[in-house]
Image (cartoon, rainbow, N blue to C red):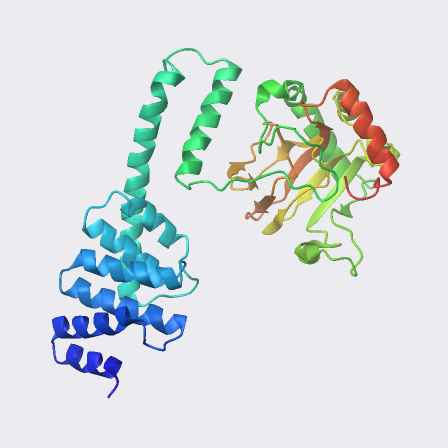
Length: 393
């Protein structure tokens, strides 16, 4: 009879101490002849025996040996977190965070599901406590919380809050990943703070006029709604396949690749006049761009990134049923009618209209505020020379 069968016999007979000792002896010898997966299973079996014998520290040692073979084994991660919690180790919260990040899809056995539910509760409480401690540590440097905040103060507060969230893994760190044009050294920020794009206030001030022009255009016979996504099937753009040439996400273009769309622009004079005063990129064959974007009910825009990080994309929500949301990187916002924002579309972003109604947003581009006038001119000339004007900038 093999030693492992003997261990099972001892376990079945209720001799947990004997089973644990026998299993530990053979595993420590290093002569089991088992593959890595088999070793993981046996080390976890030993951990279970030691846990049942109320020997959590010895159980942890067995779990660590399993993790040496398979650092991301889900059961090993769960056992480690639970045992650290049992012994009151300060690393238990972080260990639960790692285990919860690897929960497999699909139903779990009831005992494991119960452990995961308890782990989530423990982890949430740990995160709250860590947030309080981290905020307390930074408070002397942040200054008096009751002082009036300038735009710079608000920006610093956002950075510190995101720093804490990153430490606690509440947020993932996202970066600018343009498909074509990456200008180095520009600030990477999902939603750019208002003090860097002050002209958004003027855009919001024209909300009523822009919305009225959009509605009139939408209901006119001259409006041409085109699918927002239009690629050849042979192109390697699988993420867009459900929306390619699909009118569930469509657009009424006012400016397209730097050219005015006359029959639409003529019906939106207030919108066009406003756009003419904004810092839109002037790149021959590429930009400026501006459109009314229509997202049909129950339509999702999948995660994707844009072409060029030298410009921001701006939204002015015009018709937005409650519940429509927009995520850029680690930050998700609800669209709210009349509240404009500017974001970096070269950071992963997605959108959803989960309602039964149409969602309409004015979309236009603007120079990244980190570029000097000289850099803008050099970037425009370079992109034009690269011949990428129709790449969807």
